[in-house]
Length: 431
Image (cartoon, rainbow, N blue to C red; front, side):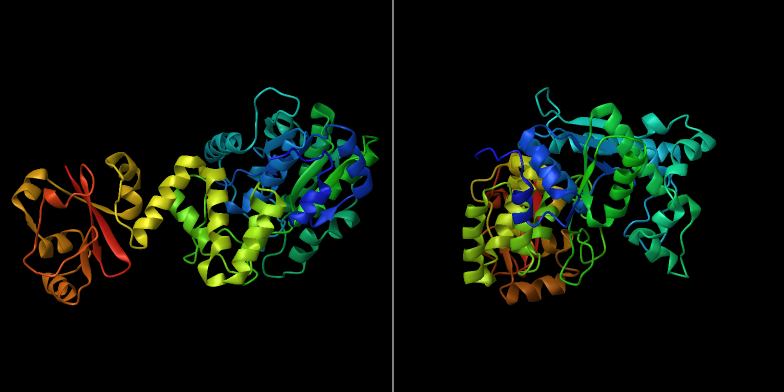
């Protein structure tokens, strides 16, 4: 992959990663001239980031590859309040212990996406609690509050939309969030020479407030870049499954397989734009992928390439391999040349029932095993399914209800795959 030019605003725009830019020509010239340190903030509302956080992270990674130093800010202070931007209701306030655990989890995750090793564009990780700790209310009003008018804040969409909602309204706590984020930008410009803030389009009001505050305090010219929000086909924010569960970046909360499947199943119309946003492959190569996709969308070529690229980035080569193995099993593939080491990490994702080797040596009736593994709710159901040709062990269809399953059926050292119908399956492990 060839190194991009320092001014990557045209590249970001071509990939659909720009909604708004402040002083675009000036920012582009600064990028072309040298390193533009930039930051994105993440409030620690959970121990893990989720899919919705990936847009500012991918922008920061692209900027870093172009020679610009990223600053990742974990909002240990602002996380205690909650940003009203893009929300219809106030966040629950977190206690300090929960907040500390969340900060630690997010710190660890960010280190996977940005390069913190020493170098000309090394990333920096910081916590805004470091500069808010010990700041008194009166001091903040005097040093910051007097420079930003209420009229200016009320004009921001993130504030105005909440004020117009008579049911939820906007607390003073949330109203003050804009000032806190603006002060973050000013402090980072002083301490880390940060000149640019990136975020989702719902952050535009907060970002421009920081730019304005720096100007009024006699600080340097600051800039802002926002990206369009990730929206699904219905216009809702992406990042939740059909059951309403978040798609987390932590593999313990959303497995690599479930993460992979989320992107395999995105809408046909959304897949090309998401591929351009999240893949680090050249645009010309992605255009070929999209052309193949458009020729026959039923093959979901674009979705598969998207799922591969983003899963590899988030979960690494091993996470992608596990996701693809699980996908292959789900859609009718056999164990092939897999070994126990390949299947052990997948047991919880696919579903696994343990039996003793002694039981397998003696032989277990397939009807009993279907019930034991919960693939069938009763022996009668198991017999009917076998009679309909809907049960298989590995790649072999079961045709007799008195069939015994033995160690000879193992597909690896310890596993065999039992299927019930087209979509239900269970790993059976000999222990």
